[in-house]
Length: 396
Ligand SMILES: Cc1cc2nc3c(=O)[nH]c(=O)nc-3n(C[C@H](O)[C@H](O)[C@H](O)COP(=O)(O)O)c2cc1C
Image (tube, rainbow, N blue to C red; front, top):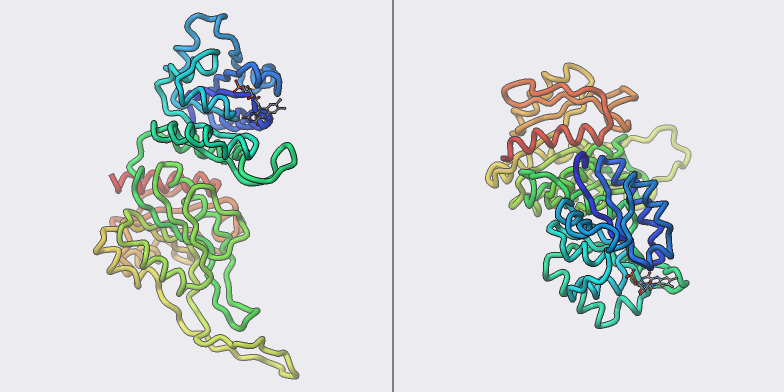
Protein backbone atom coordinates (compact mmCIF):
# COMPACT_ATOMS: atom_id res chain seq x y z
CA UNK A 1 0.00 0.00 0.00
CA UNK A 2 2.81 2.42 0.84
CA UNK A 3 5.50 1.18 -1.52
CA UNK A 4 8.16 3.81 -2.05
CA UNK A 5 6.69 6.25 0.50
CA UNK A 6 9.04 7.81 3.02
CA UNK A 7 8.01 8.38 6.60
CA UNK A 8 9.91 10.34 9.23
CA UNK A 9 8.94 9.08 12.70
CA UNK A 10 9.82 11.33 15.61
CA UNK A 11 9.62 9.55 18.95
CA UNK A 12 9.49 11.81 22.00
CA UNK A 13 9.70 10.92 25.69
CA UNK A 14 6.29 9.52 26.55
CA UNK A 15 5.69 6.22 28.24
CA UNK A 16 3.86 4.97 25.13
CA UNK A 17 7.06 5.14 23.05
CA UNK A 18 7.03 1.32 23.06
CA UNK A 19 3.86 1.38 20.92
CA UNK A 20 5.73 3.28 18.23
CA UNK A 21 7.91 0.22 17.68
CA UNK A 22 4.77 -1.59 16.48
CA UNK A 23 3.94 1.38 14.25
CA UNK A 24 7.36 1.10 12.58
CA UNK A 25 6.74 -2.57 11.84
CA UNK A 26 3.32 -1.84 10.37
CA UNK A 27 4.66 0.96 8.16
CA UNK A 28 7.53 -1.25 6.98
CA UNK A 29 5.17 -4.15 6.24
CA UNK A 30 3.22 -1.83 3.96
CA UNK A 31 6.31 -0.94 2.00
CA UNK A 32 7.19 2.45 3.51
CA UNK A 33 10.74 3.47 4.35
CA UNK A 34 10.88 4.72 7.93
CA UNK A 35 13.56 7.02 9.37
CA UNK A 36 13.36 7.31 13.14
CA UNK A 37 14.51 10.32 15.15
CA UNK A 38 14.38 10.10 18.95
CA UNK A 39 14.56 12.76 21.63
CA UNK A 40 16.90 12.26 24.58
CA UNK A 41 13.89 11.52 26.83
CA UNK A 42 12.54 8.96 24.32
CA UNK A 43 15.85 7.13 24.51
CA UNK A 44 15.30 6.69 28.22
CA UNK A 45 11.98 4.96 27.48
CA UNK A 46 13.01 2.63 24.61
CA UNK A 47 16.48 1.89 23.27
CA UNK A 48 17.40 3.24 19.86
CA UNK A 49 18.50 -0.28 18.91
CA UNK A 50 14.86 -1.44 18.89
CA UNK A 51 13.92 1.21 16.32
CA UNK A 52 17.09 0.61 14.35
CA UNK A 53 16.36 -3.10 14.07
CA UNK A 54 12.71 -2.56 13.14
CA UNK A 55 13.29 0.25 10.65
CA UNK A 56 16.44 -1.23 9.16
CA UNK A 57 17.90 2.29 9.16
CA UNK A 58 20.15 4.23 11.51
CA UNK A 59 18.25 6.05 14.26
CA UNK A 60 19.14 9.71 14.67
CA UNK A 61 19.32 11.20 18.12
CA UNK A 62 22.11 13.79 17.93
CA UNK A 63 21.96 17.10 16.10
CA UNK A 64 25.74 17.39 15.91
CA UNK A 65 26.77 14.07 14.33
CA UNK A 66 25.60 14.83 10.77
CA UNK A 67 25.51 18.48 9.70
CA UNK A 68 22.73 18.03 7.11
CA UNK A 69 20.52 15.24 8.45
CA UNK A 70 18.02 17.52 10.22
CA UNK A 71 17.34 19.42 6.97
CA UNK A 72 17.39 16.48 4.58
CA UNK A 73 15.14 14.10 6.50
CA UNK A 74 12.18 16.45 6.63
CA UNK A 75 12.67 17.58 3.05
CA UNK A 76 12.67 14.07 1.62
CA UNK A 77 9.89 12.59 3.74
CA UNK A 78 6.33 12.27 2.44
CA UNK A 79 4.94 12.42 5.98
CA UNK A 80 6.33 13.17 9.45
CA UNK A 81 4.68 11.38 12.37
CA UNK A 82 5.33 12.43 15.97
CA UNK A 83 4.39 9.42 18.14
CA UNK A 84 4.17 9.72 21.00
CA UNK A 85 3.97 13.50 21.04
CA UNK A 86 4.73 14.75 24.54
CA UNK A 87 3.27 17.96 25.94
CA UNK A 88 6.82 19.28 25.70
CA UNK A 89 7.34 18.57 21.99
CA UNK A 90 3.88 19.96 21.14
CA UNK A 91 4.86 23.18 22.96
CA UNK A 92 8.16 23.34 21.11
CA UNK A 93 6.49 22.73 17.74
CA UNK A 94 3.86 25.39 18.42
CA UNK A 95 6.56 27.92 19.19
CA UNK A 96 9.09 26.98 16.53
CA UNK A 97 11.71 25.84 18.99
CA UNK A 98 14.45 23.74 17.43
CA UNK A 99 16.92 22.82 20.16
CA UNK A 100 17.57 19.14 19.38
CA UNK A 101 17.61 16.73 16.44
CA UNK A 102 13.86 15.96 16.67
CA UNK A 103 12.55 19.51 16.84
CA UNK A 104 15.07 20.87 14.31
CA UNK A 105 14.01 18.18 11.82
CA UNK A 106 10.35 18.96 12.38
CA UNK A 107 10.87 22.70 11.93
CA UNK A 108 12.69 22.06 8.65
CA UNK A 109 10.12 19.52 7.39
CA UNK A 110 8.30 20.36 4.16
CA UNK A 111 5.84 17.44 4.34
CA UNK A 112 2.51 17.03 6.16
CA UNK A 113 2.88 16.35 9.87
CA UNK A 114 0.76 13.98 11.99
CA UNK A 115 1.04 14.25 15.77
CA UNK A 116 -0.16 11.58 18.20
CA UNK A 117 -0.40 13.21 21.63
CA UNK A 118 0.07 11.02 24.71
CA UNK A 119 0.28 12.34 28.23
CA UNK A 120 -1.27 12.53 31.67
CA UNK A 121 -4.84 13.84 31.57
CA UNK A 122 -3.99 17.06 33.43
CA UNK A 123 -1.07 17.76 31.10
CA UNK A 124 -3.54 17.29 28.22
CA UNK A 125 -6.22 19.59 29.70
CA UNK A 126 -3.73 22.25 30.78
CA UNK A 127 -4.64 25.48 28.94
CA UNK A 128 -1.04 25.74 27.73
CA UNK A 129 -1.28 22.35 25.97
CA UNK A 130 -4.76 23.16 24.67
CA UNK A 131 -3.50 26.41 23.15
CA UNK A 132 -0.47 24.66 21.61
CA UNK A 133 -2.66 21.97 20.04
CA UNK A 134 -5.01 24.61 18.65
CA UNK A 135 -2.07 26.52 17.17
CA UNK A 136 -0.76 23.38 15.50
CA UNK A 137 -4.21 22.40 14.16
CA UNK A 138 -4.69 25.90 12.75
CA UNK A 139 -1.39 25.51 10.89
CA UNK A 140 -2.62 22.32 9.25
CA UNK A 141 -0.87 19.81 11.49
CA UNK A 142 -2.94 16.60 11.62
CA UNK A 143 -3.77 15.25 15.05
CA UNK A 144 -4.89 11.74 15.98
CA UNK A 145 -5.95 11.00 19.56
CA UNK A 146 -5.46 11.01 22.42
CA UNK A 147 -7.96 8.36 23.42
CA UNK A 148 -9.87 8.08 26.67
CA UNK A 149 -8.97 5.21 28.93
CA UNK A 150 -6.65 3.90 31.58
CA UNK A 151 -3.39 5.85 31.70
CA UNK A 152 0.03 4.52 32.63
CA UNK A 153 -0.11 5.99 36.16
CA UNK A 154 -3.43 4.22 36.84
CA UNK A 155 -5.64 7.28 36.29
CA UNK A 156 -8.55 7.26 33.81
CA UNK A 157 -9.23 9.92 31.22
CA UNK A 158 -8.04 11.38 27.92
CA UNK A 159 -4.33 10.98 27.31
CA UNK A 160 -3.69 7.51 25.86
CA UNK A 161 -1.88 7.49 22.56
CA UNK A 162 -4.04 6.05 19.78
CA UNK A 163 -3.31 2.43 18.98
CA UNK A 164 -0.57 1.84 16.36
CA UNK A 165 -3.11 0.48 13.84
CA UNK A 166 -5.21 3.66 14.06
CA UNK A 167 -2.09 5.81 13.63
CA UNK A 168 -1.04 3.61 10.72
CA UNK A 169 -4.39 3.97 8.94
CA UNK A 170 -4.48 7.73 9.52
CA UNK A 171 -0.94 7.98 8.13
CA UNK A 172 -1.80 5.75 5.17
CA UNK A 173 -4.68 8.08 4.27
CA UNK A 174 -2.37 11.10 4.42
CA UNK A 175 0.19 9.26 2.31
CA UNK A 176 -2.30 8.31 -0.41
CA UNK A 177 -1.37 9.06 -3.94
CA UNK A 178 -3.72 11.34 -5.89
CA UNK A 179 -7.15 9.73 -6.01
CA UNK A 180 -10.27 10.84 -7.83
CA UNK A 181 -12.19 9.74 -4.74
CA UNK A 182 -10.42 12.20 -2.43
CA UNK A 183 -12.93 14.58 -0.87
CA UNK A 184 -15.92 12.85 -2.49
CA UNK A 185 -18.75 11.23 -0.62
CA UNK A 186 -18.89 7.46 -0.99
CA UNK A 187 -21.79 5.51 0.52
CA UNK A 188 -21.15 1.82 1.19
CA UNK A 189 -23.65 -0.73 2.45
CA UNK A 190 -22.39 -3.91 4.10
CA UNK A 191 -23.51 -7.03 5.90
CA UNK A 192 -26.90 -8.68 6.08
CA UNK A 193 -30.21 -7.10 6.93
CA UNK A 194 -32.53 -9.02 9.20
CA UNK A 195 -36.26 -9.64 8.88
CA UNK A 196 -37.68 -9.92 12.41
CA UNK A 197 -40.19 -12.73 12.98
CA UNK A 198 -40.83 -12.07 16.67
CA UNK A 199 -38.82 -10.25 19.40
CA UNK A 200 -36.15 -12.96 19.46
CA UNK A 201 -36.18 -14.53 15.98
CA UNK A 202 -35.37 -13.30 12.52
CA UNK A 203 -34.72 -14.39 8.96
CA UNK A 204 -31.12 -13.48 8.15
CA UNK A 205 -28.45 -14.49 5.70
CA UNK A 206 -24.82 -15.57 5.72
CA UNK A 207 -23.22 -12.25 4.76
CA UNK A 208 -20.23 -11.51 7.01
CA UNK A 209 -19.99 -7.91 5.82
CA UNK A 210 -16.27 -8.36 5.06
CA UNK A 211 -16.51 -7.27 1.42
CA UNK A 212 -18.39 -4.05 2.21
CA UNK A 213 -16.19 -3.22 5.19
CA UNK A 214 -13.08 -3.72 3.05
CA UNK A 215 -14.52 -1.43 0.36
CA UNK A 216 -15.42 1.24 2.91
CA UNK A 217 -11.95 1.13 4.43
CA UNK A 218 -10.21 1.22 1.04
CA UNK A 219 -12.31 4.20 -0.10
CA UNK A 220 -11.54 6.05 3.15
CA UNK A 221 -7.83 5.37 2.68
CA UNK A 222 -8.13 6.99 -0.76
CA UNK A 223 -9.36 10.14 0.91
CA UNK A 224 -13.10 9.72 0.38
CA UNK A 225 -15.67 10.87 2.91
CA UNK A 226 -17.21 7.43 3.55
CA UNK A 227 -20.58 6.61 5.08
CA UNK A 228 -20.76 2.93 5.97
CA UNK A 229 -24.32 1.65 6.42
CA UNK A 230 -23.91 -1.76 8.02
CA UNK A 231 -26.30 -4.45 9.10
CA UNK A 232 -25.37 -6.71 12.03
CA UNK A 233 -21.85 -8.01 11.42
CA UNK A 234 -19.52 -9.88 13.74
CA UNK A 235 -16.50 -8.44 11.92
CA UNK A 236 -15.41 -5.13 13.52
CA UNK A 237 -16.04 -2.03 11.40
CA UNK A 238 -12.92 -0.30 10.06
CA UNK A 239 -11.41 2.88 11.45
CA UNK A 240 -12.27 5.94 9.38
CA UNK A 241 -15.68 5.65 7.72
CA UNK A 242 -18.70 7.13 9.52
CA UNK A 243 -20.67 4.09 10.66
CA UNK A 244 -24.45 3.96 10.63
CA UNK A 245 -25.78 0.71 12.10
CA UNK A 246 -29.08 -0.67 10.80
CA UNK A 247 -30.94 -3.91 11.28
CA UNK A 248 -33.70 -4.15 8.67
CA UNK A 249 -33.90 -3.38 4.95
CA UNK A 250 -36.38 -0.61 5.77
CA UNK A 251 -33.85 1.10 8.04
CA UNK A 252 -31.12 0.71 5.42
CA UNK A 253 -33.43 2.29 2.84
CA UNK A 254 -34.14 5.28 5.10
CA UNK A 255 -30.43 5.97 5.63
CA UNK A 256 -29.77 5.63 1.89
CA UNK A 257 -32.49 8.17 1.12
CA UNK A 258 -30.87 10.58 3.56
CA UNK A 259 -27.31 10.13 2.36
CA UNK A 260 -27.49 9.73 -1.41
CA UNK A 261 -28.42 13.20 -2.66
CA UNK A 262 -24.87 14.58 -2.30
CA UNK A 263 -22.98 11.31 -2.85
CA UNK A 264 -20.62 10.67 -5.76
CA UNK A 265 -20.57 6.89 -5.42
CA UNK A 266 -22.80 4.18 -3.99
CA UNK A 267 -21.42 0.70 -3.40
CA UNK A 268 -24.17 -1.76 -2.51
CA UNK A 269 -22.30 -4.66 -0.96
CA UNK A 270 -24.96 -5.48 1.64
CA UNK A 271 -26.97 -8.68 1.35
CA UNK A 272 -30.34 -7.04 1.76
CA UNK A 273 -33.03 -9.45 2.87
CA UNK A 274 -35.49 -10.03 -0.02
CA UNK A 275 -38.28 -11.13 2.26
CA UNK A 276 -39.88 -9.74 5.37
CA UNK A 277 -42.64 -10.59 7.79
CA UNK A 278 -45.19 -7.78 7.34
CA UNK A 279 -46.17 -7.63 11.00
CA UNK A 280 -43.75 -9.49 13.24
CA UNK A 281 -45.30 -10.98 16.37
CA UNK A 282 -44.97 -8.66 19.36
CA UNK A 283 -44.58 -11.63 21.67
CA UNK A 284 -42.24 -14.60 21.35
CA UNK A 285 -44.01 -17.31 19.35
CA UNK A 286 -44.41 -20.27 21.71
CA UNK A 287 -43.63 -23.82 20.67
CA UNK A 288 -46.79 -25.05 22.48
CA UNK A 289 -47.92 -28.44 21.26
CA UNK A 290 -47.92 -27.57 17.57
CA UNK A 291 -46.27 -29.78 14.93
CA UNK A 292 -45.61 -27.08 12.35
CA UNK A 293 -45.42 -23.32 12.20
CA UNK A 294 -46.33 -21.31 9.15
CA UNK A 295 -44.86 -17.86 8.70
CA UNK A 296 -45.89 -15.72 5.77
CA UNK A 297 -43.07 -13.70 4.25
CA UNK A 298 -43.67 -10.88 1.82
CA UNK A 299 -41.23 -9.54 -0.72
CA UNK A 300 -39.50 -6.56 0.88
CA UNK A 301 -38.24 -3.33 -0.69
CA UNK A 302 -35.69 -3.55 -3.49
CA UNK A 303 -33.26 -0.85 -2.36
CA UNK A 304 -31.57 -0.51 -5.74
CA UNK A 305 -34.91 0.03 -7.46
CA UNK A 306 -36.18 2.25 -4.66
CA UNK A 307 -33.15 4.55 -4.92
CA UNK A 308 -32.88 4.53 -8.70
CA UNK A 309 -34.57 7.86 -9.28
CA UNK A 310 -32.59 9.57 -6.54
CA UNK A 311 -29.32 8.03 -7.77
CA UNK A 312 -29.93 9.08 -11.35
CA UNK A 313 -31.00 12.61 -10.40
CA UNK A 314 -27.90 13.07 -8.24
CA UNK A 315 -25.58 11.35 -10.76
CA UNK A 316 -24.39 8.76 -8.22
CA UNK A 317 -22.08 6.20 -9.78
CA UNK A 318 -23.40 2.86 -8.53
CA UNK A 319 -21.57 -0.41 -8.10
CA UNK A 320 -23.83 -3.32 -7.18
CA UNK A 321 -23.04 -6.88 -6.18
CA UNK A 322 -24.71 -10.02 -7.43
CA UNK A 323 -24.40 -13.35 -5.68
CA UNK A 324 -25.45 -15.91 -8.24
CA UNK A 325 -25.74 -19.68 -8.27
CA UNK A 326 -26.20 -20.03 -12.05
CA UNK A 327 -25.37 -18.09 -15.21
CA UNK A 328 -23.59 -15.41 -13.17
CA UNK A 329 -22.63 -12.98 -15.96
CA UNK A 330 -25.98 -13.23 -17.76
CA UNK A 331 -27.96 -12.68 -14.57
CA UNK A 332 -25.72 -9.84 -13.45
CA UNK A 333 -26.17 -8.02 -16.77
CA UNK A 334 -29.90 -8.23 -16.40
CA UNK A 335 -29.59 -6.84 -12.87
CA UNK A 336 -27.42 -4.00 -14.14
CA UNK A 337 -29.98 -3.00 -16.77
CA UNK A 338 -33.07 -3.52 -14.62
CA UNK A 339 -31.76 -1.55 -11.68
CA UNK A 340 -29.84 1.22 -13.41
CA UNK A 341 -26.34 0.29 -12.18
CA UNK A 342 -23.04 1.39 -13.67
CA UNK A 343 -21.16 -1.75 -12.72
CA UNK A 344 -21.91 -5.09 -11.11
CA UNK A 345 -19.43 -7.31 -9.29
CA UNK A 346 -20.63 -10.89 -9.56
CA UNK A 347 -19.60 -13.64 -7.21
CA UNK A 348 -20.65 -17.22 -7.11
CA UNK A 349 -22.69 -18.51 -4.18
CA UNK A 350 -22.20 -21.86 -2.51
CA UNK A 351 -18.39 -22.09 -2.53
CA UNK A 352 -16.24 -22.00 0.60
CA UNK A 353 -13.52 -19.73 -0.79
CA UNK A 354 -15.72 -16.93 -2.10
CA UNK A 355 -18.95 -15.05 -1.59
CA UNK A 356 -20.81 -14.11 1.57
CA UNK A 357 -18.95 -15.80 4.42
CA UNK A 358 -15.43 -16.26 3.05
CA UNK A 359 -12.35 -14.12 3.70
CA UNK A 360 -11.41 -14.42 0.04
CA UNK A 361 -13.46 -13.67 -3.02
CA UNK A 362 -13.45 -14.09 -6.75
CA UNK A 363 -15.46 -11.50 -8.61
CA UNK A 364 -16.14 -10.69 -12.21
CA UNK A 365 -16.84 -7.06 -12.93
CA UNK A 366 -19.22 -6.15 -15.72
CA UNK A 367 -20.83 -3.00 -17.07
CA UNK A 368 -23.47 -2.27 -19.71
CA UNK A 369 -20.94 -3.02 -22.48
CA UNK A 370 -20.13 -6.45 -21.00
CA UNK A 371 -17.13 -7.89 -19.21
CA UNK A 372 -14.71 -5.42 -17.65
CA UNK A 373 -12.42 -7.75 -15.75
CA UNK A 374 -12.42 -11.22 -14.27
CA UNK A 375 -10.39 -10.89 -11.09
CA UNK A 376 -8.50 -13.86 -9.65
CA UNK A 377 -9.34 -15.37 -6.26
CA UNK A 378 -7.81 -13.08 -3.63
CA UNK A 379 -8.44 -11.54 -0.23
CA UNK A 380 -11.46 -9.27 0.04
CA UNK A 381 -9.09 -6.40 0.89
CA UNK A 382 -7.33 -6.91 -2.45
CA UNK A 383 -10.64 -7.29 -4.29
CA UNK A 384 -11.75 -3.99 -2.75
CA UNK A 385 -8.65 -2.20 -4.06
CA UNK A 386 -9.13 -3.57 -7.57
CA UNK A 387 -12.81 -2.65 -7.66
CA UNK A 388 -12.06 0.84 -6.41
CA UNK A 389 -9.49 1.31 -9.19
CA UNK A 390 -12.39 0.85 -11.64
CA UNK A 391 -14.71 3.13 -9.63
CA UNK A 392 -11.97 5.76 -9.53
CA UNK A 393 -11.43 5.56 -13.32
CA UNK A 394 -15.11 6.30 -13.89
CA UNK A 395 -15.39 9.03 -11.30
CA UNK A 396 -12.47 10.88 -12.83
C1 LIG B 1 8.38 7.71 33.29
C2 LIG B 1 8.00 8.97 32.58
C3 LIG B 1 6.94 8.96 31.70
C4 LIG B 1 6.55 10.11 31.03
N1 LIG B 1 5.51 10.06 30.17
C5 LIG B 1 5.14 11.18 29.52
C6 LIG B 1 4.06 11.16 28.63
O1 LIG B 1 3.43 10.10 28.39
N2 LIG B 1 3.72 12.30 28.00
C7 LIG B 1 4.37 13.47 28.22
O2 LIG B 1 4.00 14.48 27.62
N3 LIG B 1 5.41 13.51 29.04
C8 LIG B 1 5.81 12.41 29.70
N4 LIG B 1 6.87 12.47 30.57
C9 LIG B 1 7.60 13.73 30.74
C10 LIG B 1 8.53 13.94 29.54
O3 LIG B 1 9.42 12.85 29.41
C11 LIG B 1 9.31 15.25 29.73
O4 LIG B 1 8.38 16.33 29.62
C12 LIG B 1 10.41 15.40 28.73
O5 LIG B 1 11.02 16.67 28.91
C13 LIG B 1 9.91 15.29 27.31
O6 LIG B 1 10.97 15.51 26.42
P1 LIG B 1 10.81 15.36 24.85
O7 LIG B 1 9.53 16.01 24.49
O8 LIG B 1 12.01 16.05 24.28
O9 LIG B 1 10.84 13.91 24.57
C14 LIG B 1 7.25 11.31 31.24
C15 LIG B 1 8.34 11.31 32.13
C16 LIG B 1 8.70 10.18 32.79
C17 LIG B 1 9.87 10.22 33.73
